[in-house]
Length: 384
Ligand code: CA
Image 1 (cartoon, protein in one colour):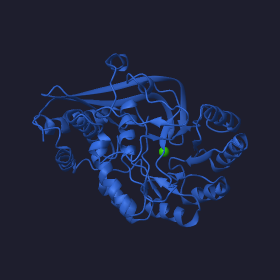
Image 2 (tube, rainbow, N blue to C red; image 1 turned 90 degrees about the horizontal axis):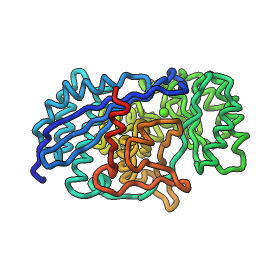
Image 3 (cartoon, rainbow, N blue to C red; image 1 turned 180 degrees about the vertical axis):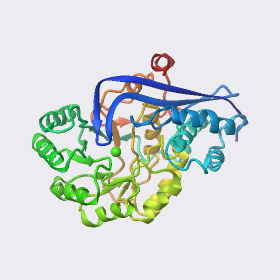
């Protein structure tokens, strides 16, 4: 291991008001926010990381965990000891962490350490994870947020055409606004995209209990869905298993679960067909490795949830490059990239070469570390 020390850790909390607030099933999103972290070393290398900030939680929680709880554990340590430092951070915060924003804070630092490691060895992170199974990934459009709440089927159908015209072959529809309204929206979208060869997924963000979640799933049985995401609350593991037993489409979830310990419960409960750890929330790249190995052993595919700024996007692409196929076959289904189509300044502006979809593909950056360069002027512009 190269000799090196962490000399400083800086947290950047960014905020930007949305011109048009929008809703998902759990609430209204009125601003974009991000908790970014920058880890500096005595070798002159800088690593970037990000803690998940969904839109509802204050980004200051993860920032405080980094500043007050985790930074003292890392200063002076060798940043290349990624696994050692992950366990140091997890064990030190166990009694008040394990889930939520504390693990998101660990995630941000862990991603930054892997960025430093890639830069130190002069390779992309995927090379350190064991190599690239793929150099590009097909993106799916995430969108279909609500402006009014209900009764927006016609607008959502028009939005589906926009995603299709922009080159997306897969789309994830946000549902969970009432089962009848959900069904009406899906019918309008289904009619609009007919004949275009588009695959749909749905995501209710755990809006329903088991009975309604099943009713919606049964009503959508003929849409050939790629998956049905977060049908019930993340704590309801038996509910997840019941969805898998009674519905025909694959069941996905896990963006609100954390670390190898949380995923152990999900996998043991046979809750998932597709595991969706979020790199900014699950514990970072180190935790994603633990989770991927567990999922592989359980015959469950991993397809990361992707939210947040360009840093989280870049980290997700590195993981996606290195994800093994779970159900191997000549024409196996590989992971796809969640690509949020709503407006997000920390995504388009934060790095000098934004991550974009071209011709139905997103290329995986192959520069050292995360393979992206942060524009510091953007940090100043949106600093909270
Ligand atoms: Ca989701």
